[in-house]
Length: 554
Image (cartoon, rainbow, N blue to C red; front, side):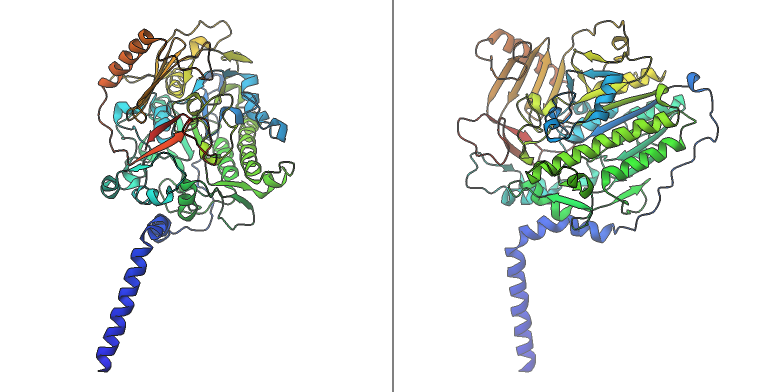
């Protein structure tokens, strides 16, 4: 009898536990990525990064060796976040004097574009000089767990348009770490190595985390790799957090992100301080280690991507900003600009300034899901849209004696142009076995440089596509079924859709778009989520049926 009673109680407890687990299955799934990380990759305490020692003395005179090259990439930084391009935060006491200094001493690209409106695709383009859909990188990798809980996270009775989730694909998709850039691609790091460059990656990668896809197998001698996405632990006294309860992405990030990096694919360990400042410290150390040989550094910051976290020091310095979210965001911009300043100062101190190319840009425009409406002004749209707000980015470069100081470059340029430009500057060669879509800008950047010829730029996200040529911009969408046609010369902020008034121009551009994409392969992994985005409103602003919208495939 006692055994039967014990068994009955056990079965009842098991049943109750099963019911509880089933009832909370989405919440458990929402936290699963973080728990999995804690189990599989425990973080060690901070320790010094063992950067390789460069030559003790110069391998050749500075004037005779190829230029050092530093590409600094911000994440989700909008055009209006940099005072040279808009000055949206200057009245709040947050100018960007160090980013501005690159433009002052070199060139600002007044039509600077990212190659995609989302991170992975844009980064693959920057590193290869190619449209990434040429090699199947079309969608940003999404953890299957995130896709499977997205329906619940996005459940909102006031939402006019549904989030579309392919649950079957979400269950069967490859592991998040297996989605990235094929190692058969020729990155800028690979192409610089024959010219004697030591190649360094610091920060975000987001192009796959298998050994084959990590930076060390993509041309980089050294990699300080951001393994997750916290700037500091959430409860650290050195950090100030801003959580957006209206943003489903934010709700997923907070329980799942961790504070960890690795060096050359080793064990995870914790950075010593606020992540932007930590990456900057290590960039400074790596520059000093390599001052006697040519080096290429790809400093890929996490800032100012969500989760929004500012160092307490930067937050406290902006007490004049009353809105908490804006204050945290502005403090994050402050840290990025300080990073640029410290890199430039190190180059001066080490006598490397005159022989170093420095390029600063962002991977895409700022997102609407942070709830700050002016980040991309004067342009419409956000990250995840093919409108100017999603594609126009801050873009500046300097190379004393080779790029005319104070230049304002008017022709459209893209992040795909970085590879052919810096490889040419280094005296390297481009691969001949594949198309390179970018253009070497050096012939157009000298004081008496020629005018860059007109060309067509393309963007692609599933059936949501765009192109730009000769001052015209076309966007086509399947959800909703709509075309947008803009004359950017007359309407740079894309307010007036001319698709109905210009049928011949529309037909001609659509034919060009179709011809470009007809030769492209299928994506390496599918889209899991189709996300509606209001073009002119942030996520926390109520959308009406009169508002224009589009869908992003991710």
